[in-house]
Amino acid sequence: MQRLFPTNGNLNLVDSTIHYYPLFFKGGEADRFFDLLLHTVPWRQDSIKLFGKEYPQPRLTALFGNNGKEYSYSNITMRPHPFTEGLLEMKKKVDFKCKTRFTTCLLNLYRDGKDSNGWHSDNEKELGHNPIIASISLGEERFFHLKHRTCKAQRYKLLLEHGSLLVMSGTTQQYWMHQIPKTSRDLGKRINLTFRLIN
Ligand SMILES: O=C(O)CCC(=O)C(=O)O
Ligand SMILES: [Fe+2]
Image (cartoon, rainbow, N blue to C red; front, side, top):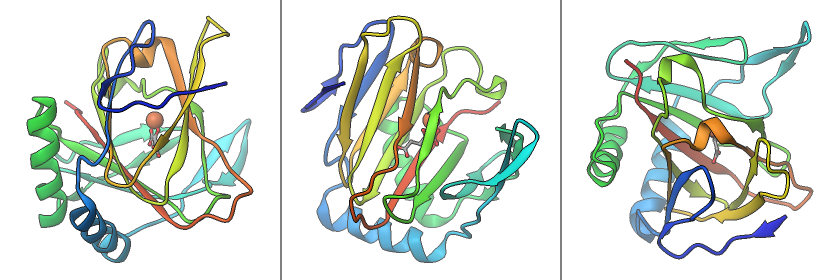
């Protein structure tokens, strides 16, 4: 798997539109949001059903939104909390950068290196065709893996840094899958926010 070192902008991978912006939130601001979210979000651990058996998700999650629309994936249906002041402040900056009015934000808390997010595409039907997804990373850096569904040689990883923004749009979810793998390295907490548009 080839490591990418994106500086600012398009990753230029086939069949996709993926942009990476380091330091989208600068040091002090990113630290402030990390602490705020860690301590105020009502984090929960849901169970997912795989082949008829229940497993606790290997991370904590929460859903926020401004239109009451639910989000379902892996047999979980989440109902949104109303956005908080802090999340609205972040959303405003993300909306402006992406020229989009996001409705919903799914948050993930990776408590340590053992927490993870398995291979998937964000292709749930409520996201519509070719969805735009804006992903903010706060706290510990984690590798983000990308693999093309059919061109097996197309596999990459990049480090998602504190305060960074990754935007996936166009045909990305149709052709590519992504994951945050587990690692045996002794890592601290990471918070991820994925802004989504649900109509
Ligand atoms: O934690 C991340 O950076 C990715 C999260 C993700 O892929 C998701 O929630 O759909
Ligand atoms: Fe995802």
